[in-house]
Image 1 (cartoon, rainbow, N blue to C red):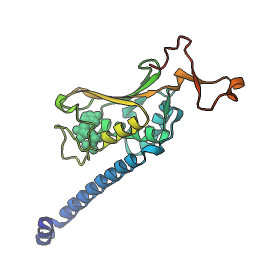
Image 2: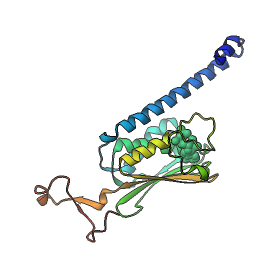
Image 3: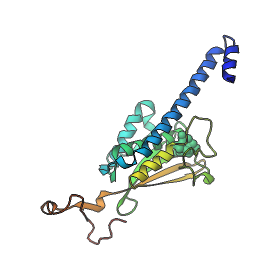
Amino acid sequence: QGLHRRRRDADDASRPGLIDRVEANADRVLDMVEALVEFATQRAGHASLVLADIDIAQVARGAVRDLSPSLDPSRIKISEDDIALARANGVAMHRVVTNLVLNALKYSSSDAPVELTFTRSRPGWVRLSVIDQGRGIDPDDLDTIFDEFARGRLAENDGGSGLGLASVRELVEQQDGVVAIESKVGVGTTVTIDMPSPRAIKPAAPSQRSKLSSSVRLPVEPTGQASG
Ligand code: ADP
């Protein structure tokens, strides 16, 4: 109502600026509603995330490419030929990478690089790291930063919803993955996603396959200590 009155009283000169602000606020509210709907939809869709053996490095490159028209691609460092096989859902991983890269870019200065790496963190797992050199997160916020609506004490009036990291955690855990964050104020933030790797398991040999149920898989490492 206050805004409405101010708008009615505004003289012609200030009116265009006011309308811009009203529109910007409306856009923000719409963004938040979209984030909420997406988050709620993900939760509801828990049972329907189908996992497959996929190359999450390839998925990540696709997500970065899809973002490229709207941001400076030279800021993002990602290997063109890494292969990182994981048991995961491609659509969910695309969403996870998109969220993490957008955060890394948003909370860094406009010329700071953002790096994506793929490593074997431990036997049976593959790790995607999103590394930035941005403003970092206050240590007292790290335990709760993945909670819904948590924005941390360094958050500014920048229109964030606090649902990005919550949806990353939700999606990663729905795929039996593990997400973690490390951060130093003024130095940067690294988010790591550990996903089970199909390298630790291999399908039965073709001759045996017909005798075994399609879901039976044999350990690849002869020592049997594979799937850590
Ligand atoms: P949003 O970005 O919409 O606020 P998120 O859930 O994605 O919501 O992030 C929660 C909060 O965590 C952000 O408000 C921000 O303060 C902090 N944050 C997330 N990612 C980073 C990052 N890469 N660097 C610094 N702060 C971050």
